[in-house]
Image (cartoon, rainbow, N blue to C red):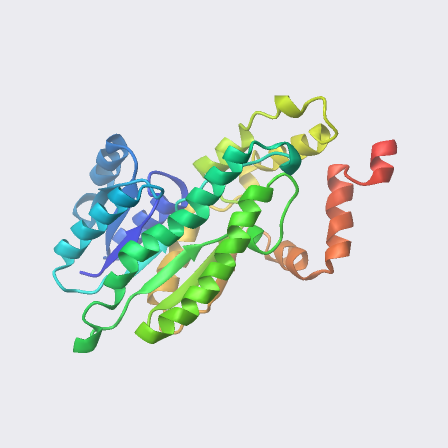
Length: 285
């Protein structure tokens, strides 16, 4: 049975992917930080799921999990590595605590590097015996190419992940390992819920409060959000199609996403500024 490692399967995209991949006959090793989550998902998904207890910022527990997977594969190559775990820090960039921004980068970027360093070598195990190497799937975001105000740390982490993935894809040519980016739009996940629950009261007396309220309201529109299992299907495709694209955008409104990524930036700036009340004329009104 082919095996895939997915980080961050306690909820959201990771859990949706674990459901889709196990239903397709793959074995999923999924990372969680709490034993209760491990037990819950194991009970739901059964023998095709093995929980791995680690935090993507903890190098020692990552290494222990990689050793466990290596031993259980017993010389077989890992079929896929899905770097999914992530968080979103929101707020006006000039007023955000630096520790919050460091945490954003530690989880969404440095964590990806740590996990990849530990697990990626398992993807080309047995290549010299003619076994087909596996693939790496990076969960980026439409925010990896087009940034919204008040999500600068999150957008910065995803812009960086896009560049990191491109470099890694070219380095992995040596081993025949593909690196595929999946860029979701808004997804109905626990992370989106946490975004909606962000405390913006500290900014109430500042110039950005009205705009922040509008951005936070975007997180409370489930009708405009993708379901996690839809992303699971995209991940399955990226792992199994014979010739995957280097990047897949999966968004509720593909045309809107296309325009945001391809219109001149000055035009997009004014559109977003007008929508969020960030233009000087709007502030005077």
